[in-house]
Image (cartoon, rainbow, N blue to C red; front, side, top):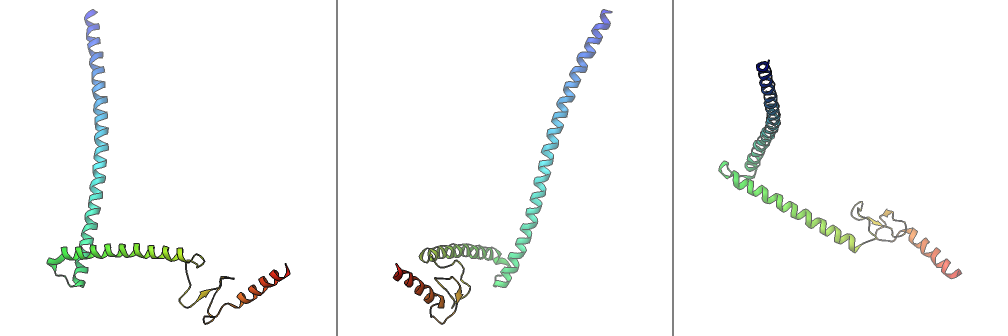
Length: 152
């Protein structure tokens, strides 16, 4: 009976050891699956980037042809386009700075004027074109203010 219990104990110990190994393998496999999924996602992202890059290369070649660059000058065309993009961003920044300066100098001027040649009335704020003459409401408002001043 003692021999049987030793065999049983050995079997139980071996079973526990195998269960621990299986659990370790399961954990390792799950980690492998996670890493594999992440790598598949990275590969998919790189494929998209490559497609976009090839598309951009085609656009650059097309623009290079329109600008008069030959096929060998694709890099110079790309440099030219990058320079144009930088210049555009510089001009946008300069435009924004000038707009802020204008708004700071003219606090009563609305941010968006409807068109050139129209001026807003200081009294009512309506945009009118009276050929450089003041708005008719300005005179009435000034007369009313003067009348109040005389009454007090």
